[in-house]
Image (tube, rainbow, N blue to C red):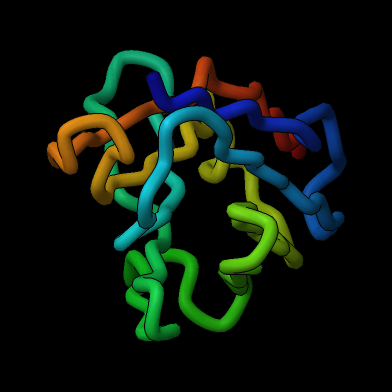
Length: 121
């Protein structure tokens, strides 16, 4: 009922930049939190950055100062600008959103299909 579609992953050299985007669509009454998680090979999925509807953000310590999350509430989109990328940033990046559905006003949480980010040394 809620679909998240990511774009913008790819292969980049260490020190380079990438910008990820995620579009949310479906039976959305509201979106509370949107964020990005990363799953590196052999590791659990971990929070990279998140932003609330009001604009409050939080970041993993490892990306502070290098990544910036932003969202457009009118367009139901969230972006992740990544600079000074490191090989340890490599992984599959998943978009996340939670909020309220229009149908039945029930809560939801949704995940995108993931986009691969590979940083070469």
